[in-house]
Amino acid sequence: MHSNINLLIEPDYAAMSRKAAEVFAEALRERPEGVFGFATGGTPEGMYENLIRMHRENGLDFSKMNAFNLDEYYPIKQNDSQSYYYFMREKLFSHVNVSPGHTHIPNGEASDPAAECAAYDREIETYGGVDLQILGIGANGHIGFNEPSESFTSRTNYVALTEITVQSNSRFFESLEQVPRHALTMGIRPIMMSGQIMLLCSGASKAEI
Ligand code: PGA
Image (cartoon, rainbow, N blue to C red; front, side, top):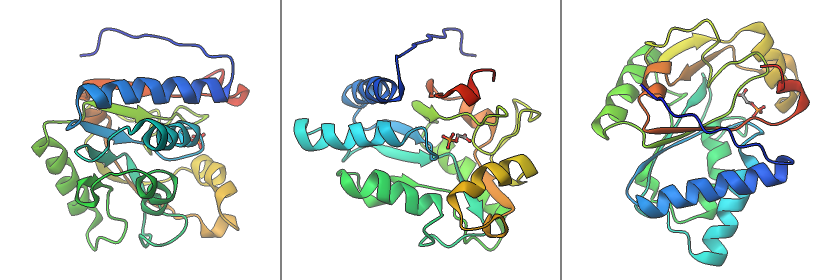
């Protein structure tokens, strides 16, 4: 179990994003072949912008890194502009020298979502678990698509989105009806098995949670 929690408070979103990128870059330099867990959503975008800059300006090297993303909508086509596959490509992967075969995101096009989740868990285990997992947190406390009531032992699973999550994520879609109602999400267990977790949280709406 994780026993050390370091709470870093930065003056604003830009400073948080820079600090998060520094922490990530240090871990990547220490462990270029490490397993890094990525998150989507508005929160890590600034961190990804900083990582792209560090790649361009300082040659931060992603070529040996292995990436596992937290979650994906279901069903969704990879090339749908709302998919997390698309998000990662646009916001980070296509701008740095990550090896295409080294990125893993639950497949929103899989015919059997439960089997896809079990295979994803096995794949994470094959790599020895995640070394550094980046997390956001929802205004209601969700982690990935794990709602706060989820057990700490939950494995990667196929979940129905709660109404509050559908509504919150609808800001990225043209209409509420377009938001997928299900998702594939890394479970709390594989998340908690990570060597280190960096949870990013910004904004007054999340102060309470
Ligand atoms: P956000 O989402 O970064 O877009 O606020 C976080 C989350 O819901 O996990």
